[in-house]
Image (cartoon, rainbow, N blue to C red; front, side):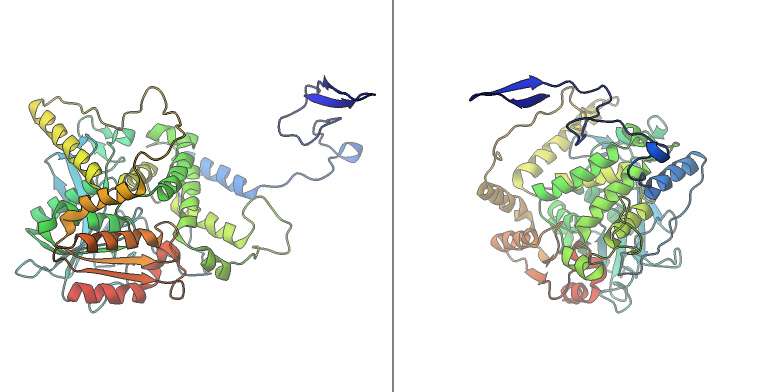
Length: 504
């Protein structure tokens, strides 16, 4: 370090100063540094060391998991409404395809299973089936039924006389390809080597997911054309993708708080979650099965995600600046009420969802783009992979999931395509939906899928329309401040337009 020393006259000289070996980085001390001394009396530190009960809890959890002890986290949130997402491994049926599925990025699965649940009854003409699409972390358990009486994540939205009326419609909900609630995903067994896929699982897309769903619809129920594809969040992406993939096989599409292409802001948010998760040493590059799972990384990733699911105004009203216990001194562990809320949300979720599924499914969201260039490229790659597979039974795809030997270098430049050109590309890509009836729903308080993205969908569809009816509804902050979770919590405001559109 250089020390500035005044010199008689007009000049200033600098002299290097050597600090004792005990000096540590990030010290605010500039002179006379002294190492930390513990003890009592004359040798006592000026302040006691802080305690970290949050870290103590994580250490205990690590120890318990190493001993095979798994404790369920009790739901103690009472300050406001919360989505009913639960760990589900029972109560669903399995569709198994022994045919390979070829994927947008060149990979394939030699066979796969899709978990699904149903409500209502399929009519004789097989014209009343609704495929219900899920968000990132939801199972197929959207509503309770005799096989699983627990409340589902859209419990009061589906049922006799409700917004999706099971007196009129036959509802099918699946766990997505790549998930961990029954469908084939990274935690599943690869039939080629009888080991779990882990990160040998191929990169998947939203369009891959809906093509797997369509096989179920046809093979299990014999339905050639569904009444509607309905979804919110990632489900809104899937419903649009279903309409894009099979425009002649769907009457109506409902996309709630979704988008037609992932934008940089939402990609960045999910990137941070994946980086935190992958930095957990227990993740072990995806090969943690049978070992301690990366529960710390998963907990933190979920906390980041939870911030994006709700809105600041709601939390202002719900938590304010209140601390959990005003009688205690401030702490670096969760201290404010909003911190304890996030801590609880992460802790509750970290062992309920497979970490690798989180990585793969969130990446599928990032890759979503119904623009013409992206979809044309994906179709060409998939067709080439299928052709190569049937030419050579020992074919191993060289997919884009293979990590390059050298890391990508940052390039400071502008986007390779202008905003205007990107919009024209999206319009061209979405022409396949020009004759489909579509309901688009946006929420002004949503920060994860900002409302301009739903407006974009509606505007593009209207510009393309060749007979398809396009409806757009938007909930302002005067109606809901629940943010992205509005579709799970403001059921009446979402449900009335959905019901009217489905039954028109």
